[in-house]
Image (cartoon, rainbow, N blue to C red; front, side, top):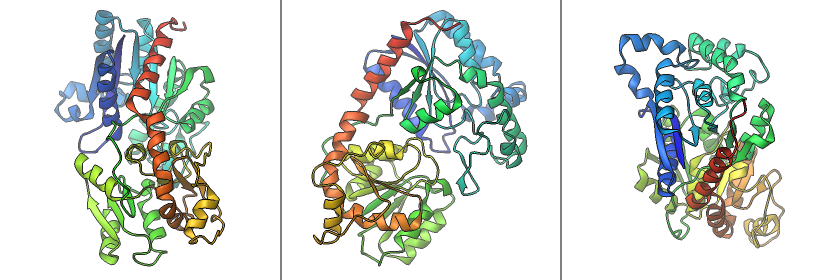
Length: 422
């Protein structure tokens, strides 16, 4: 097969899991024998653009003429079986869907965020979940609250782009929903079931899991929507040392909050921003990985990395997190159900599981509240060893590159067999 992969890379100064996933997916497809034709633009190109090109930037999210010309040439020359779109903003534009269809090339898009509806893409504003623009013809609240890059003008442009391209998005031949939550989002947007396929991302297999370490690892951007402040609040509700060590990795605007907690308590360790070797070492040193997101997080890659290393996950019951840990359709491996875990927590006394803790195949989910997370921390610590084998098994069955790449190729094959709907 011959596939065009289109992606506007986020700035390298702002670490992007989406960039990493796209690079990894291209490598996995190539290794599987697919001919990949990258159609890549990068936001890092913007400062070096000519004055004429920069003058067109305000309209590029709606229509990027240079990108359409370049894509038309690529499609004419190589006649690919499909175009796979990831992020179109700002230099590619959703218009590439129309350009591909004009050439008779079907389009699949992986949905990494909520930007069919939300200008910021994350349904989160001023510290809380916000869906004020859902169902509106034009996202006026996004303009009012300066949701895109904290600019009223840029927010107006993005809201207009989403309104203009509503029909474009509804013409996409196949959507890749990374989780069941994203599939629900697409259905609400008006996409029929037969054009939605749930296919998560994959991460490389790190090999046989090391023995469990101790304590917890939080590894994410240190920003309000990722919930590090929620986690620290929950952690402080336990005596120092009662839960082992909390390791925090990452960087962001809430870094001072983490540094203060590490200075205050010896059971909190701030690791800073880690490279790949550092990530693996931090995962192996821990028993449970925490995903404390305060927004409908689409697919935190750290969860898949944890499962690959045989580490169960304690997360908030938002977005794709329940799907990732198998808690959207709970499964309780032998010895890890609520009764057994509660018994372990109570030292064999058989105390009931604290209310509000959902047990999944490879971890636990709770409401995004300090009290709920605080109650779940000792449960997760006691149950980590029991869920560790199931965590690795879930990775092998659902998130391994061999499994996920086959799913993606099957999607391409299915689209190539049907002509584009005219």
